[in-house]
Image 1 (cartoon, rainbow, N blue to C red):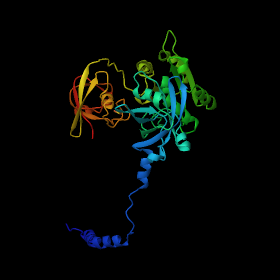
Image 2: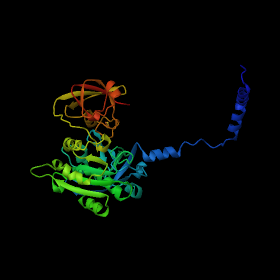
Image 3: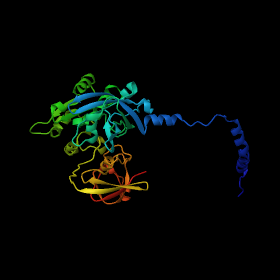
Length: 385
Ligand code: FES
């Protein structure tokens, strides 16, 4: 068989010309310096900044134990525009309290339109027993105070390719904040879905944003709101029932559940009756049932690069919380074991964890999320630096 070498010869000739062609291109190119800034990078930074700097523009008292903080860019720190967010997302705020450095996530309660039009976020914070950061905000933060915050993050958002167009939000207490943001976005034409909010509270005076929710309901026929208040016979969440939900159901429905931990078990059992695909039940920061009561004191050794620091940690305290108290910073966002930002290696000891979202390979190689891990013995962990 004779080989056809014609094509091969042509390639060899082209190859011989490569050097000459390359020289030609180099000499013909612009003498301008190669750009160090690219539009794509600028956009990525605008949409997903690692950090943003904000100051408090206004503080609105919602009720005796809840305030809304209006945050705008801190131009002195070179934040000019706040990043856009999806309704339902959070930001994590860093605060210095005594010797500790704490970060906590808070849902953004306004419409994304507020970022576009007014370059601002609002977060609504409620007093909590042992809520170090929440209580600090309510008691000490004033207008013009400045903070470092993260870019918006979180998956508790409406995604038209995944979620049904009819949303039933089952909400308890201050869990209303991400849902209000969704309602505002529907009203502004940013989200295209229907929303029924079943909103429960312990006492009537705990209802947040009543006036605004009523306005949205009256002005926009895609939004419905029902209120439930605990009474002597039943807590508000025990009043969520099929009878209450069924009139709002359509062919396909997504449930968005947002509220305090105590209502989750009840609501999840209720929703089992609907035999829904898993994707149709969404939880805001779901972390199952936690029952850590011990007061035992353990020693936690934290390895940062080559350095080791040993700190005390109670059995009922997360490793991340103990680190924050002692001024040890690590990257963190969600604080419920979901985002993976605080992922660290467990070198020694055992922990109890309340979130099973750790990847199988991480479990195998003993990685943990300190934000959702409680010590069961003395522990050594290595931070991801
Ligand atoms: S902060 Fe998100 S997993 Fe720990």
